Image 1 (cartoon, helix red, strand yellow):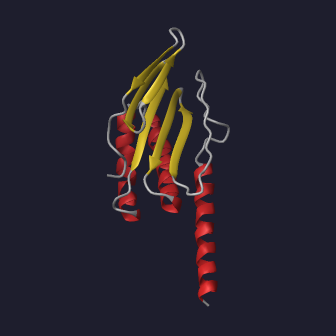
Image 2 (cartoon, rainbow, N blue to C red; image 1 turned 135 degrees about the vertical axis):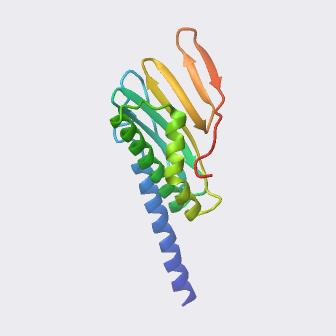
Length: 172
């Protein structure tokens, strides 16, 4: 009886991990990140313990947007929170563009945080997400958020510049 219950519990856990892995893979842009005028690529290889990794790239009315982030924690809760952030990011940007507003990345992250903060607290009061948003327009890049530092390769001089990521986490 205990073995049957243990097998049933294990099957449920593996089912949850498979669902989390499916959600995480669904967050990647379908045909790879597509931003006109930029070479972009993304690849995700999920670990046995799935987390809330998030990469998204898309264009809104001629402006490219790139998001990179990671939800704390793992498995289904982290994957669901990453999906909420993706939906919020795209919704915020399209809503602002429909109003004729071309927002700074910091405004977009503030709006995302306002939209998802309560959900992060419901899932787990200690849950948060590191997130960087980049706006790509007219050969210029503007960024905000707190995730990994940004590395920029300058082809003309074959140099690599590092820009520290400063900002706030989403969900706190």
